[in-house]
Structures are given as structure tokens and as C-alpha cells.
Length: 167
Image (cartoon, rainbow, N blue to C red; front, side):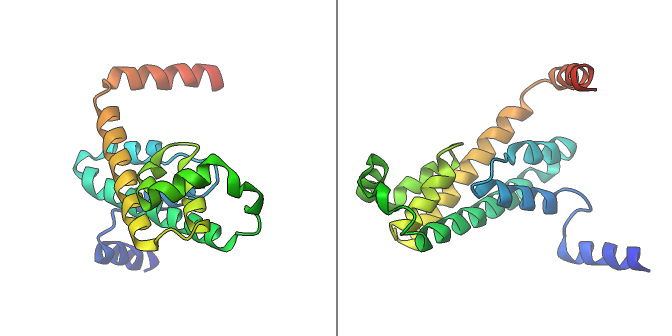
């Protein structure tokens, strides 16, 4: 009974039984200041089902953008914590270029703090979100397409090698 209800709910929501929910959650969490990458999850789902390329990229973009929005609001509310950093070059750079700097929100290591600093500086919210989404969407398309062009034999070799080392 419960299984049929879950299957009905998944069909109703048009979510495959495996993949998109995990991609969304991983992309959301990885956009926060926690060190986690979402590209492997996106690639795994697309590699398992190439027809899911665009839905997976869009779900990952949505999750990662919403995580970036959380970073923005953390920064918006954290003025006191960053008061000492006001004179740093990052703040001058962000003030100079404004919301367009959110195009770099995809860059590992600096993208998530940029979202936080954008909120702290009270950069315009919706333009920041739009540029953030564009940058993150571009990253997912580029990374997934690039990974799809790596031959299957290489992935098999990588799996066997890491299995021997860690297994």
C-alpha cells in the first residue's frame, strides 16, 4: 500500500524514482559554505540516463541557486561579522561590478563566499539571483558535457584502480 502511494506520488510529481531529488539536495547543500561538490551527482544521473540531461541540469541549477540565495541572506544578516573586512579588495571589487559578479558564483572556493558577500553588501537581490543562476547553469552544462565525452573505458579503469587502492 505505501509503495504504491509513493510510486503514485513520484509519477504525479514527474520525478524519476532515483536521481533528481538527490541531485537537488546535493546541489543545494554544495552551494552553502560546506565543502561538497554536486557535479559528480549530476554526471552520475546523466550517465545512467542520458535522456535526463536537461532535467538534471535544471534541477541542479535550481538547487544550487537556492543554496546561493541562502548564502546571500546569511551575508545580508551578517554585517557585524564582516565589519573588519570592509576595506578588503573583494568588497571594492564587488561594489564596483555589482550583481554581475554573481556570474562567478560557480567558481569552486570563491563562488559561495561571493554570494555571502553580495548579501552583506546588499547588492540588488533579483539581479544577483539571475546572474547567479546563469553562472551555475553554465557550469553544470559545461561540466556534464565535458565528462560525457570521456570514454567509458577511462571511468572503468578509474573505478577499478580506486577499488584496489581503497577496497
